[in-house]
Image (cartoon, rainbow, N blue to C red; front, side):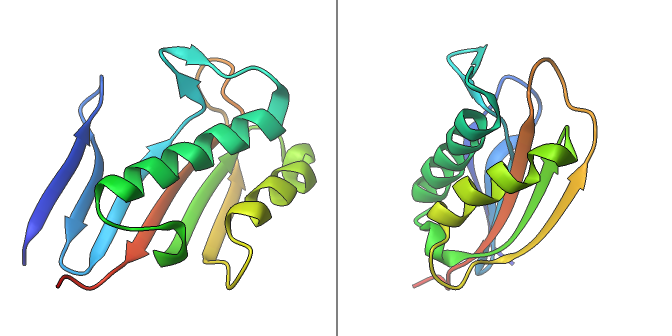
Length: 121
């Protein structure tokens, strides 16, 4: 199986890894230039999904190639607002998704990882 790594982070992880026809995107957080995005769950969700979009692009994929996401919210009370933003990034045939409530670092309210499927060649 061919494995290719995309992007580097300040911590020991790859932004994405292609393994065969799948691209695994590490959990993305709402941080820009080392600063947590302000503006609540709406702004943070948009920032995270913008990061996912950008990482997928480096691996030759688009959001429409995403088959599964895993989302972490620090407050389940933000689920409705999160969903409204999330839906704008996946307007047709959204991927399978798991969403949980858990603590995250700093003032981060959301983290999302993704798996995309795009055959090589």
